[in-house]
Image 1 (cartoon, rainbow, N blue to C red):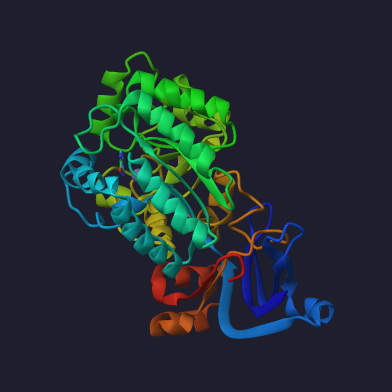
Image 2: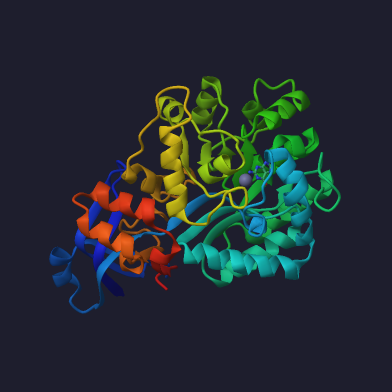
Length: 426
Ligand code: GUN
Ligand code: ZN
């Protein structure tokens, strides 16, 4: 066992933040040998019980749960910052040509290495990631994530329609490949597999039907896709699937909405869509930097909270502009205030932080596993040092409440603040 003494942030079951000014985090193996949180609380009350354990004292630091990114494309690491009038030309002009290179395992492994380094530098310890349509792109990612001991979930993109040569797959083969990848990677160490139809317009009915059948056969794998991001995209999806009530309902009609299904964006919803999210247990991956960059629109926090479906935060790199959870939380704050048909929701810093840690874990069905520092959670955490940024250092010294403290990090913070990212206590 080993212990860390510093300020500690975690979340209670009711989503409220629990903050220990002078805390102790004790980590060590559980009965299965997995590194977990063995104890957490005030230093003064816990220290006597762990007198024999080595304590690393980290004055001025904040220990917090590793961040969870609910939606990200590892092959788009080098697509960040590609300007386009909107989603569809962005896909055609930058994303598809770029993703075609991931047929090459060595190329994919090179990008996956940079991607995993970036996640760690930014304090992200778990992600739900898209690969590309090439099975090799999944293998490259999983091999590297496994070697690093990460809890990661990813999947081969399904796109047999309206997609150019180089990324388009074949219906039958895509489903055979998906099943083989599930068997190879799902639940191997800390890895998970996600069935990954890119979005309804890129999939034939047969491919969506096959994806739904696989989802039924493997009930604990994840499902991930995109929905209701962009008005042109929505019009196109409705034309292609006129029998479905809405764009979102296409996925439900093919058996692709349930617990452990995560839909990116979910911007242009009506209340029936929101009710469908709630009824099925599906979750939204809110991706504010992407939505602002591509001009897609604004996630309706008021509607989501009123109807009550699950959501959490995501970078959506490379539509998104940053790997940094601080940048994503700040963008979510702007979106919560602005761009709504009704008065904006003012998201508290505690809400925002929850949405990128315990809330995102909840959306994945991984509450109590990652995204928090309660007893028994896996020992993935960040050590933040505000002293790495002069302005943040001043601001934190003036913070008179937990909200002020967390807001300082959200508004001013970036990867410089992340002094160490701990994966399974290492
Ligand atoms: N819709 C279909 N594919 C994509 C993608 O790669 N990024 C985003 N943001 N939306 C999509
Ligand atoms: Zn995306």
